[in-house]
Structures are given as structure tokens and as C-alpha cells.
Image (cartoon, rainbow, N blue to C red):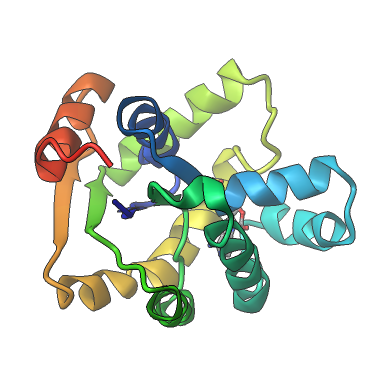
Length: 192
Ligand code: AMP
């Protein structure tokens, strides 16, 4: 089972992905986590990505698609994946489709986590405080930029997936537990 979780930064995609990993044995593919690892490892990609991420902008589509391709081909992903923070542009969505077709795979569910954006700002501030500023892009200024980028580049992929016919949404303003059970219902007890 392959799932895409969509929603603005701070919507809870990472938290819900972790639960799906634990409950469904899926592998979480978070392009943000992959980029943060590249930064921590001091790779050339990490060096390039850091400035872009700190500015709240998007890393180039070909780099992101290359990272996803590499992971999707690995045996650990055979049971299924949760795509978290990807795709973020129409070009990425189209690139993903082409890649999946080539690999004989498909997306089973696209789930949008909807949130109130004023509340999001508060949520990101809390996350920044809790993690002691561990993420250099978790601050109100960069969040405003990330939200703008979400509206300009990522929200346009929602109609793209609506046409797919396997798109659902959950109210992300509820508790983590409630959102998790709403997602569970969408997945309809499918284990992997
Ligand atoms: P995230 O952890 O998903 O919020 O991602 C953090 C940052 O990494 C984003 O603000 C972007 O700069 C970059 N990033 C993560 N995923 C992507 C993606 N699919 N396309 C472009 N940039 C990305």
C-alpha cells in the first residue's frame, strides 16, 4: 500500500506518518528528513540544500525525484511507503507518476490533512520551543514563506490528485489520536 500525505508545513504529516509506520509496517519517505540527513552528513547536496531550506524555498525537482527514485527501488520499500512532504510541485507529481508506472507501482491513497493556518503558526512555535530550535526553518518568518510556497506550488497538486479519484481529507485540527483514526478509516483496515 502506497500513501501520499499532503498538507501545509506543520499539519502533522510527520507525526501521522510515524504512526502509520508503527501500525501498518510501511516505510516513511520524507524528503525533508532525507535533506536534513544530507545536511548533517555534510554532503554536497546537503550544502546546497541548506540555504534553500533555511529560506523556506523548494529544492529543485530533479534532485528530489532522484532521491525518491533511489529509495523507492530499495527492497525495504516493497511493502509500501508513505510519502511525506513529497510531491510538492506538479512536476514532482508527474515525475512520481512516471516513476511508479515504470516500476509497476501505484498510489493507493492520497490523504490531505487540512488545518487552520493561524493555528499552524502557533503549532510551529511550540515545535520550535520543544525542539530547542533544532530545525532552523521552524520560525515564524520562514514559516510564512513556507506557507506561501505551499499555496503557490503545492496546493495546485490537490486538483491533480482529485482527478485520480482516490483522494480523501482529514481534519488536522483534531487530536493526534482522532486524526490517526480518521486516517485508519480511510485506509479501511488495509494492513500493507
Ligand atoms: P519538510 O520537513 O517536509 O517541511 O521540508 C523542509 C524543507 O525541505 C522544505 O521547506 C523545502 O525547502 C525542502 N523540501 C522538502 N521536501 C521537498 C520537496 N518535495 N520538494 C522541494 N523541497 C523540499
